[in-house]
Image (tube, rainbow, N blue to C red):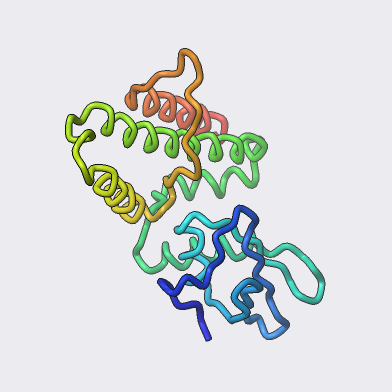
Length: 190
């Protein structure tokens, strides 16, 4: 039986959720002892859970393969997140010198987005006089959940980032830095 959301069947833990793939290609959730679909796995990830998918017989880690499949299915359904030029640059990176830079660039870009979202929510709380009103924290939690749902969970902060000395709180600086990194990657892939 597939995972039913809202029933509390997924254990809250920091370790990755282990999913085993059987020879029949069915995916088995080892925590809840039931079969899951790709959409279930995508939902676990959107909820902030790390997953690891392994082949039962060989023990091979299949996580990357299934994550790419989830992305491809969402993109093919019209739930496009990745612009065509970004996809084109990714394809180019597999055949160029940029392939060594691309993973670090993408990881840094998503980290900046997570930090920016976290800081934005933090700044909203500081700047808002309503923050002292009863029930504000519940309302803020709802806003964060809404923001997470609207971004498909891709920018959900796993934990609040520590603020380093001299680090800018300005979202515009983050956007400019991301644009500069994207431009640099684009020049490298030519």
